[in-house]
Length: 389
Ligand code: NAD
Image 1 (cartoon, helix red, strand yellow):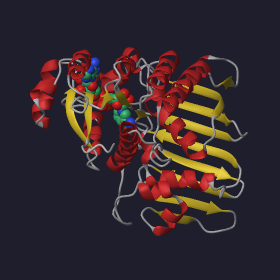
Image 2: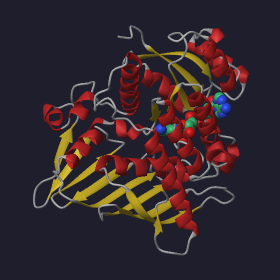
Image 3: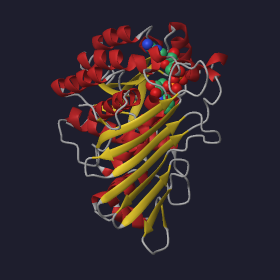
């Protein structure tokens, strides 16, 4: 039966001064498929209430903590209670919150890295399967139209057999001991009890996910070095890896939070036997295609020639060419597909393939396997460490 209402979203995290919670809230409402109705927005209940006032939410749907939110939401009739929760807290909270909401029968959208370790990731994977719930993971970079085009060009074998992948995510915002100033985002990211791993978990996992998403290949072996450049810092702030993929392709993956001059310079180069691709997060509307002996082509988002090659890219595009789309839209694309899949499930129908194109619990597990393998490799004296299973 058709559901004649928006999907109801709850949020944990995203209190006053938080970064990514607000991005989720804006992105989730971009396509008018979702409305935010409830939340436990902050670790401090007072600040959660403050956020709710700012958002003009019904005070009765603002909770002191996520456990109370589960208990009280379950008392509401289906259709009034939240359909799903978005988890936008620091990393250490992802697992208990996602697990408890899944156990209570709620669908989940979770920030990355999905959990603190592989064991927890496998628990979530089992829960999602046994409860038949929808689980999205916010690897937002897979939401860009030109990333989807890149993926379709690989699927259509336009590059030929993939030989080499270079993926990077350099930043510079932790080049100084920012955490010692009390800066909120730096403080928890450099506390191993809240972040788990440092730079490798925070942004290395995005690089891993982007490479595997576009190429469809899986990393099999890693040779990694993790370094902490800022004195006294308790987690790595620089990560360099050689990687091998399951088709025999080789790669370089590096991430850094001390690379002076780089803001969010996520970029990827993919080289096949016939063609090469290049994409930059800071210039996301362009995909560069290279051919041996030929000129470099610049493919631009929003054009018909993109839609012809990639229905996924066309579906992820809102504006005509030349009007830039970027970070918010990519988040919204993850929400859009997640919402359509969830709506189909609630209506008792099967979502089509384009709708299910969003990162899920299996990608979350891949991310945790990657992080643990990098940590193991960095602590090992042997050259190659097999990807954990
Ligand atoms: P932040 O410190 O800005 O915000 C975290 C918020 O969570 C704060 O409001 C805090 O009070 C709240 N919080 C903490 N514990 C809570 C709990 N138990 N219950 C309710 N609220 C709680 O952090 P951030 O930079 O927004 O990062 C949050 C998460 O998002 C992290 O997991 C991070 O890795 C991820 N993130 C992802 C992206 C991306 O591009 N996908 C970008 C930034 C951050």
